[in-house]
Image (tube, rainbow, N blue to C red; front, side, top):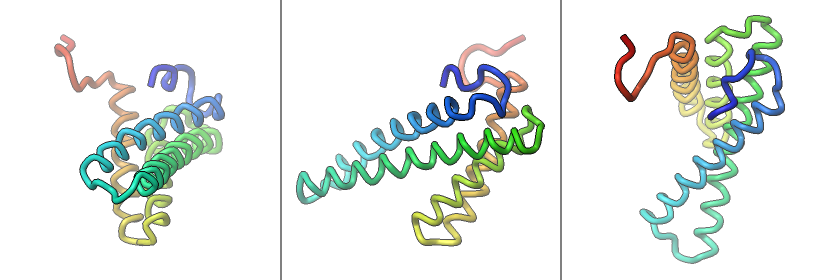
Length: 136
């Protein structure tokens, strides 16, 4: 996600939202490819519907995350706060729960996505690394 972390939070909301939407769509395409291979739909039309549904859902989740995070940073006037990312992740989880027609799914996804997003922000601020040699 080169370019997403460039510049202060709460600025360039359309560009950040477009970037997260594209990342979500790419993840949806990848996930739907695996789903089609593993579940083997009955026809090509069913496979196309499955791929379109998954891709649109993931792109929507990416857009909700990007827009909510950016607007939260603008409204709260704290551009480097991990709480903005928790709010964005929670909103994304709520949309996923609405898509699934399940309060429980929305609640768990809200907490899971929000916590993960906040940890990503904290890790980015503090220079955490998942791969590669350790910094000394």
